Image (cartoon, rainbow, N blue to C red; front, side, top):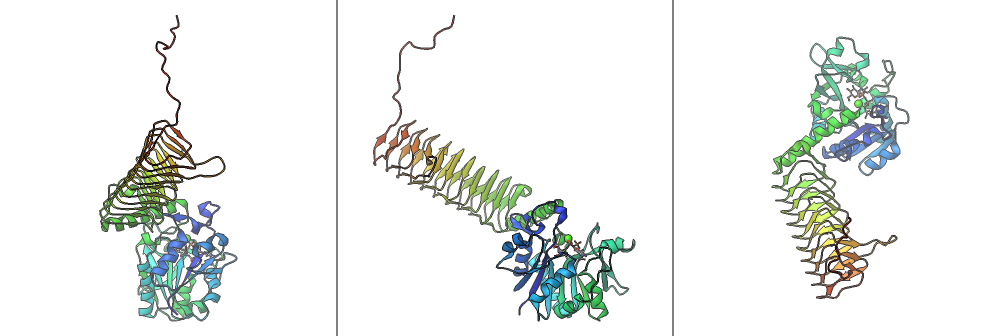
Length: 453
Ligand code: UD1
Ligand code: CA
C-alpha cells in the first residue's frame, strides 16, 4: 500500500457564522478541504480518508472520487476524529499522515517532507511545528532539557510559562500507523475542554520509547481558517503565491494585489494583466494578450494577441487577435473567431462571431451564427426570444447590418447582404440583396413647431 492520509474535517466551524460547513468555504474558487485533498495527492498520497461530520452530505460530493469518507457522528475531539477513520485503514503499517482539513495553504512539498522525515528517523511521530509571534489558540510544543519534543499542551491547559512558548502545533502529523492505532485507545478526556486530544499521542509515543520529531514549516502554510478574517488572510496568501508563480513564468502584472487568479487557470508567457482582474475556473490566456483593467473571465479560453478590456466572459472561446470591450458581456457558448470584435456595451450569448466580424457598439447578439467579415451597426439586436422559446439567427459572410436593426428570429440573412439602418427584419434576406424594413420618412415643408405667443 502506498502512502495514506487522514484529513480531519468533521468540525462545525461555528466561528464562521455560516450555514455552510467551514471546509466548503472557498479560497480562490476552491473549497478549503479540496485544497488539502489536492495537496495530499500531489505529495504522493495514494489513499485519502476524509473524516466528515457536520454538513457531511454537502462535503462528501466535493471530495468524492479523490477520498474515501469516514463519519465522526459526534465531534468529541481530534483523537476521536482520527479513531473514526481507523476502521477504513485497518491493517495499515508504516507512515500515516494526519492533516487538518481547515488549512488550505499547506503545500505538497511539506506533506511529502513530513512523511520522509518519519521514514528516515523511524519516528513514532513527526509533528509539523511553526514559530509564531502570537501563539494564542494553538497547542504549544513543550521540549525537554535535551530539546526533544516532550508533549503538546493546548492553549486552555497551559501554565502561564507554557503560554509564553511561541513554537506551536500546526495540526499536521506523520505517525507510525501501528503506534497511532494503539495510542488512540490510551487518550482520555482529562483536559480543560473534556475532549479527546490527538496531541496526547505525542506524550504516549514518548513513554513508549518512540522518537518524536518536530519538523518546522513556514507559519503561513499552516494558517487555519476558523473565522472569515482568517479566510480573507488565507486567500490573500494564496493570491500572492499563485500570482508569483505566473509572474516568474513570464506574465506581467501591473498591480498583482488586485489580480485574483484561480488555481486551475493557465497563462502563457508575455501575457499582460492589468489591475482589477479575476480569472477563474479553467480559464486559459494565450501569449501576447492583454487582460484588463476590470475584467472577469470564468472557464474562458483566450488565444494570442487579444485585448480583453473591461470584459466579463463566462464559458467563452476567444480565438487570436480578438478585441473585446470596454464593457463586453460574453455569456456561455460564445465563440469569437480570429480577428473579430465584441465592442463596447455588447452582450453576446451562445453565438459564433466569424473571422474578422465586428459587433462594435451597444448590441445584443444571441443564438446567432455569423459568418466572416460581417459588420453589425451600432445598437443592432437579434430578437431571439418570443416570450416562450429562443430562436436562431444566421448572418452570411461579408454582410453589413445598418445601425439599430432588429433581426427578429428565426431569421436568415444571406452573404453580402446590406440592411438599411433602423430596419426591423422579419423575413429571410437572400445573398447580395438590400433589405429595408422601416417607415418611409415624411418631410413637410414649413411645418416646424408652432410658436406660442
Ligand atoms: C488543533 C490542535 C492544536 C493545533 C491546532 C492547529 C488538538 C487537540 N489541537 O486545535 O494543538 O495548534 O489544531 O490548527 O488537536 N475536528 C474533527 N472532529 C473533532 C474535532 C475537530 O474532525 O471532533 C477537525 C476540525 O474540523 C478541524 C481539525 O479537526 O479541521 C482541527 O480541529 P479544531 O477544533 O480546529 O482544533 P484546534 O482547536 O484548532
Ligand atoms: Ca483549527
